[in-house]
Image (cartoon, rainbow, N blue to C red; front, top):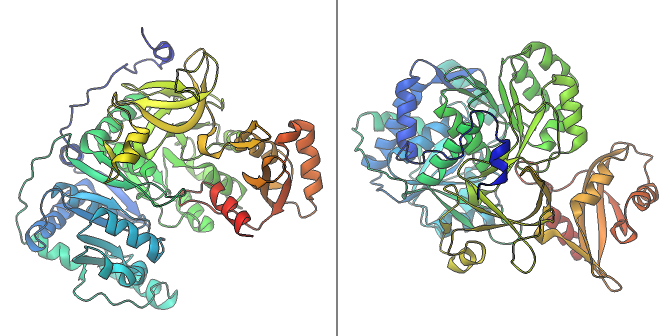
Length: 560
């Protein structure tokens, strides 16, 4: 039986994609470099590198890894970098050398970094000097034998390079003292590698491209095994979905989310390299004035982000000037990584006349599972239709297929689904069955057209006196209340009801009271869903892409 969502696909989108079009990410990258050699590929702080530059530099870095460090196919190399020109050079260099990439959040603590390096067995790492002191504290407890360090401006023209590196290190004092004996400077590695020939490595769909670690908000981070076939398939699925909106070799995509995160890695870097686009890398999107200044200088056609980032831009002074500078160049604005709030979507569309297109994904699916059509005219609240070559199934609590119209845990099967968790067979078996179905842990519903709607994380459900409360529903009510800027909801153990609903709120109106919030919730929610306690905070704990960490809030409540 044909899946019902196929009847509602945008015109020209196929039901299935050719997962063998590219043998590997290396193959995809090299074909793009040959095809778009004269086009800019990456821009950062006003400096651009063309596809020919990225091809040449990544080849040199690959040769350095092979010929100087002696690394061989399948060994793991870690990258602890923000969005800089060095990232795509190093990434594609490692892939061309046949290595497996381990992305590391540069803001990790020593404990988090130690776990990821030790668990992955990485034998080499490239790190921005700003974070080298953290590596120094843990390297002796890992298998890392080779270190490459880089500075922010290393791939800028000489004068700008010297100025930027001087300011970062000595004016802004952003580089704590570090000592890593034997570390090689990135530019020296490139010069050395350029003197060697690259030994071509045969790569196929089954070879491992990434150990992409999950956030670890429920314990130690797990290494998701993503093959070249997984990532190539997701790029092809995404490309089939967006094909009617974009032109090869002409797009400019703004990339504010970190490339070490799976969303930006696939949706921005890999997909738009295939399209021959120019990725404008934003190193520090939290610097909103600097981000806006960069946007005003860029005639971008695509931007991706998360709800938190879009809200910050809309609230920022001077953002209206970005629209004026951009004119009508913007074609698509994509929201992912966390739920998009209706008020943010509505405000964005009023300003730009272009809706925020929401999708859904997770690390274990490389990550994109579903998306709304790019020709949507308004925010719908849906997380879209399953992408081509993607099967979905909703399961109830008993593990059976959920009744039509009823919410259930989203299960996914397709070529983008991971091979498993690194060295964790029991965890793999818990979420990935013998038939290839991935249990996502997310509860969704589906309408009669096949559109999916996010309900909440299965693990975050709050049970109050036997009744289920979905935190997202309570958060939605809170965020519609004037004076509430941000809100997070979690369940906290309670002697009478088992669990009680607690809410943490960042307010924009200093006169807003907890009682006012509770009264509004009473009027719009059943009694057991109403927050038992409201706690005001200056900010809420978030993941690197801005997702509110409910478990962190709960842990703080328990420790208090």
